[in-house]
Image 1 (cartoon, rainbow, N blue to C red):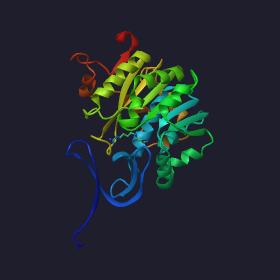
Image 2 (tube, protein in one colour; image 1 turned 135 degrees about the vertical axis):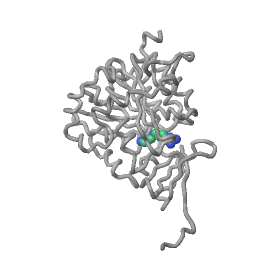
Image 3 (tube, rainbow, N blue to C red; image 1 turned 45 degrees about the vertical axis):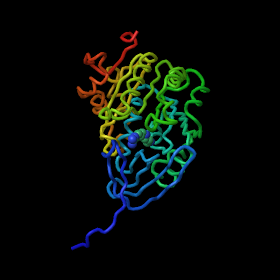
Image 4 (cartoon, rainbow, N blue to C red; image 1 turned 90 degrees about the vertical axis):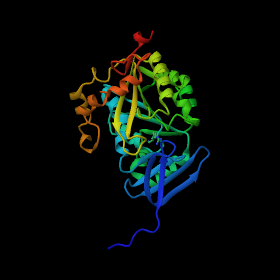
Length: 308
Ligand code: AG3
């Protein structure tokens, strides 16, 4: 019989006052206060290495594939020929790794505000940060809001906002002027994808609803899609796809997508062409979150004409 445990180190991200997710911690691998936030990497018992920023779980070795595949592939498979991509945030390199899987991608600008995040990834998550070595990747340590202000019109096919929660310095990445610049620097067929928190969590509901209203005024369509991410608050996560022209389900061509992914599809662990459609089908309670004046919405999509 093994001896009973006499001490243990645990880490909890609190989702509410006293409710949260607890990890068993074996070792603290990285621990630094940057100019922006507290950056930590923990070796945990059940989820491998975990990156936290100001105490919030950003990724775990075990389930990062869900978030990174789902923030990148739905839009990349929908666009017929994406060439230039902008990633705002994402200093760990996970989103970049997914974008660079496509041979037709020519250039990816990644704008991360905090170089300590990049360093933490280089030290503790080489399987993610390896993406920075690709010659198509250009790394900018800068503020995303200022970067999009200065970027040229109609340049990017896709913008991915891989940010933390809409608080503190990340709040601007959910705001009107940032979205306006994004719309301006995207091509006529361009798409903006952003992480948009958990539909189960009321904390950010208002800022996400406000973001939908803003995006609805700038893009022809705005759609929510979902994925299961065990280590983010409530385990069910949403993404928002704002598109100038293409409808994410109606205009999605599964054969073309399968062809485009042929060289790497067997290495993906979450996304596939069948799942693409399923991800945009929303549970009824999620549809109702965006109901106008209590009227149930029929789908979580806004069209410019409906909004006026
Ligand atoms: N960005 C989204 C993380 C949001 C998690 N929120 C939380 N734990 N409260 C993750 C960055 C990974 N590239």
